[in-house]
Image (tube, rainbow, N blue to C red; front, side):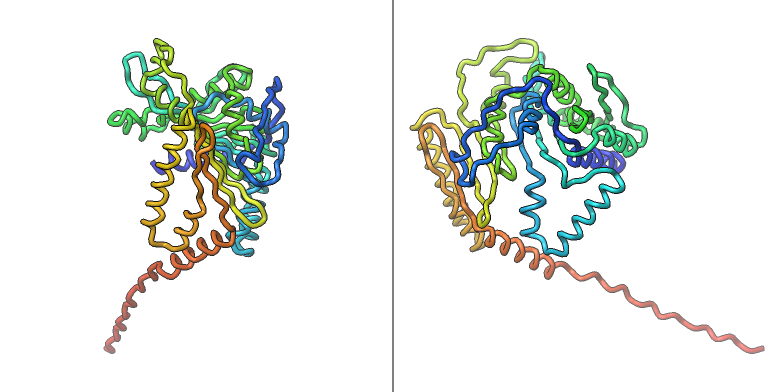
Length: 379
C-alpha cells in the first residue's frame, strides 16, 4: 500500500507544481462579476490567459480556485518566521534545480468535483474529481517524472490527440468489493492538457477535460463567473449542492434515461472566498435563497447557529473571530462577510504553535546498560 501512496503523492505533487496556462483554442467571453459586491479590496482583472485557460475546463458541480503565488508571497511570510521562509524558498530552489519545477511559478490550481447520475439499474455513483494546475513549467517533463515515480505501473491510453497515463490501485480495488463507494477511486490518471497545463484525477473526468479543450461541454460561464467573481481571492469556492443532489439521486433521470426537472431552482448555489488587504483577512460569501422571504429565514437560521457556536467555544480569541462574521439577507441572497485583523490571526496561530511545542512529550531516555568487565584469570 505504501508504494501506491508514494505514487499518488507524486501525482498530486506533479499536479500542484506544474504548467503555464495557454490561450484557449477558441476564446470564450467571461464577464467577471463586480468585486465590490463581495470584496472591499480594489478591483483587479485576472490575466486573459488565465481566464481563457479556466474557460477550457469541463463542467463541474463544485470548484475550488487557489492562487498559489499570493499565498506563498503574501500570506506565508506573515505566519512563518523569516528563517523558515528563507528555508522554504531554498527548498523550492532545490526542487527547481533537481526536478525542473518551481512552485513559485504556479499560476493557479483548480480542484473540480463532478457528480454523476445513477446507473440504469439505479445504483448510486460516487462523484469524480479533477485537479488542474498551470504555470511556468513543461507538462511533458512532469509526465516523465510521474512515469518514473510509478515504477512502470503507469500505462498509456490514447484518447483523441492526447495520451493519458493510467494506474489501477489494487488495494483500493479489493476494498471497493466491500464498499462500492470507493469504485471511483480504484483508478487514477494524469494527462498533459497543454504545453504548460497538467491534470490529475478520475480517468473519465480527464477524458472530459480533453474534450473541453477541444470545445465540447465546457464549464458554463455562470459557474466560472461565480468562481472568479473576486480576482483578489486567495482561495475561492463555488458550488451547486441542490443540483448535485438532484443529479445523484435520479431527480434528473439516470444515465440511460434523462428526466426533465420539475423545478429549476438555484437555491443553495454558493460562493465563498478568502482574500486580504494590508491589515485584514476578508471572508466573503453569497448563497442563493430563491426569494427574499426564504433569504431572511435562512439568514436568521444561520445567525442563530453561529451565535450558538460562538458561545460554545471556550477560547476567547476564537470567540472574537467568530463575532466578526456578519450574516445578512439582501434580496434573494444570503450574504456572509467578515473582516479579521491579520495580527489577531497571526498571534492566535503562534500561540497554538508554542503550546504544541511545549506540550509535546520529551523523548524517553533509554536506560544505560552497565558493561560488566570480566577479569582474566592468571594461570
